[in-house]
Amino acid sequence: MATMAFCSNILVTGANRGIGLELIKQLAVKMGGEAHIYACCREPEGPGAEALREVATKCPGKITIIKLDVADEDSMSTAARTVSEKIAAGGLNLLINNAAINKPASPAPLSATTKKDMMDVYETNVVGPHDANILVSLCVPGNKMSCRRAAIINLSTMVSSIEKCPETFSTAQMYPYRTSKAALNMLTRCQALDFKNHNILVAAIHPGWVRTEMGGMRNTVGGLVGGCSLSQRQGTPWSGRQSVTGLHIQTNS
Ligand code: NDP
Image 1 (cartoon, rainbow, N blue to C red):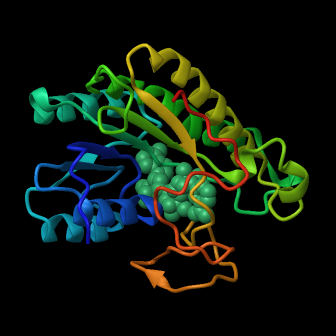
Image 2 (cartoon, protein in one colour):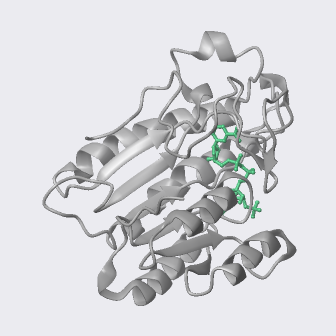
């Protein structure tokens, strides 16, 4: 398997299960020897992080598990301090804002949605990536914009697309989730403009449908990999680099 030698320090939020965990697994295999992965999760010692701890044990020296609740400002500051101390002069090359929630459970029609659902989902899915800006100070911008230097990737979704709403609404109403991810797209666009002068690349991607706790059970083509299906509805393998299917990618490049 080819290795990717360009990124040395990568931070992923929500890394204990689902897409986040699978990203850690694949990055650990594909990254070169110098690379280090900061795998963030809410409860590093808890049962929900057992799979992540196993991956870290299998890759000694490559993965550091960091406690981070993206909805908690203090937790974000503490995590940023910890990473900053560990990272030393190396700097952060890639920040993947992956952690998110979807409540109430799908299909979440308007009648079943409360103000608390709206607020909770916004706090995690939008304020979390916003507050992760504190980590951007750890990024090392180069003289040319490149994901080899410094990049922020926000995990968005096709159901946040206003243009595609008439096609996706009937199957998944999900008011809090959709609106939060639409706001995340705007956050991404603003960050992209803001960080352009520092040559920090910012992009939002839709990973395609992936069978996870959030993605739920649908008819899939293909098998399970580590509890996380890498198959999409269209049957194309999820590469982790797939840009977007129908969602306009928000980027400053
Ligand atoms: P999962 O529900 O499987 O995993 C969500 C992850 O986010 C878990 O690790 C969870 O940790 C973490 N998380 C939730 N809240 C917080 C918080 N406050 N602080 C830190 N971590 C938190 O979701 P997926 O893996 O399916 O989704 C990952 C990303 O991809 C999301 O941004 C989602 O919107 C996006 N996406 C997913 C699609 C899919 O089909 N699955 C499709 C399109 C986009 P914990 O165990 O502690 O709850």
